[in-house]
Amino acid sequence: MSDIQVQTFPYTPSMRPRRLRRTATLRRMVQETQLTPNDFIYPLFIRHGKDIRQPIRSMPNQFQWSIDRVIPEVCEAYRLGIPAVILFGIPETKDACGRENYDLNGIIPQSIRAIKDAVPEMLVISDMCFCEYTNHGHCGIINHKGETHYQAHLPEGYLLNDATLELLARTSVVHAEAGADIIAPSGMIDGMVGAIRAGLDGENLAHTMIMSYAVKYDSGFYGPFRDAAGSAPQFGDRSEYQMNPANRREALKEVALDVAEGADMLIVKPALPYLDVLSDVRQAYNLPLVAYQVSGEYSMIYAAAMNGWIDLQRCTLETLTSIKRAGADIIVTYFAKDVVKWLQP
Ligand code: PBG
Image 1 (spheres, rainbow, N blue to C red):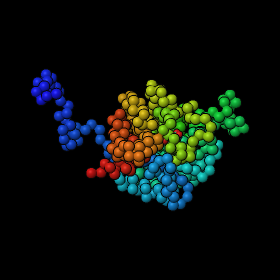
Image 2 (cartoon, rainbow, N blue to C red):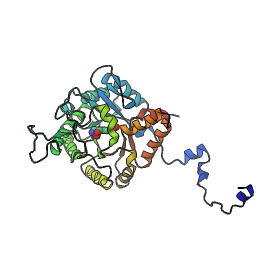
Image 3 (spheres, protein in one colour):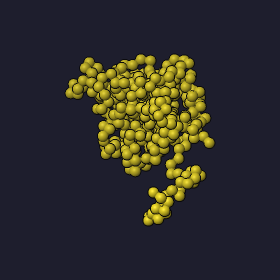
Image 4 (tube, rainbow, N blue to C red):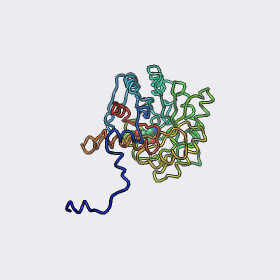
């Protein structure tokens, strides 16, 4: 094409959105979504023992910590401006009903006391589930012939809903009494929020909050977590209690129930593959909305970056900004500490 043709090209746009993108200052001023340290919750895996900082094979730069080593990590996170941590425990022993989870001296009650002692202002969230503590790796009590809770009319291996509720309520009280600010039930057990609320209120723990994993999908992206927390189911999968990834409208039903049962905050999980769901929940409800960028989302970005295929910082910030743009107020992410450092001026 010659210059003359360009000059006489007969169309000039009347609208010019690029006007608002011409300089960095301008782009900064008109930016709709901002990330701040207040947006993040930092997940931590804690195990028994001393002086342990064990790398997690499938999650680069993430560790299993002993309590003595996790304290400085939590102090640093708080100093960086991160307001909350969510704790996952690796027990000494596993059994059919996950006893260590409600043992006063179990790994999580001990960790909560130690963290609240060292950094009282840090919000401590306890992930309330049984899969790390049970020998079968499921999120509650399993129907098994010969066990106390056995129900002959239900199949062998079925996750017993109401028997699990009792355990969730009891364990939540133990963790709240240890000092947990927030209980985060993650098992997709029907009635879990109501049962935990009743349990807490019955023990004078009306101020303990419930951050419900209201919408949790049966996702392949939890793979690395099951490695990190040793919580893979020993038989079957979680499709009888976690949601089918194909369902969008059903998410609003799950949220409605948890709101009615008294949830203070809502979680959608995983995050990036479910931005439509996040956006739906944001539009329909006014509770603080949390998105969980799960282990597989983390490791996928990390692996590609380690291969030199994508830029770690840029792509991570892009995913987190997208998650917030879709409607999340708060994001649980293994990148929490990195992001907060990247955001520093
Ligand atoms: C416990 C729980 C899981 C995750 C958080 N809480 C595992 C699962 O449901 O299998 C996954 C978190 C992650 O992948 O980062 N039920």
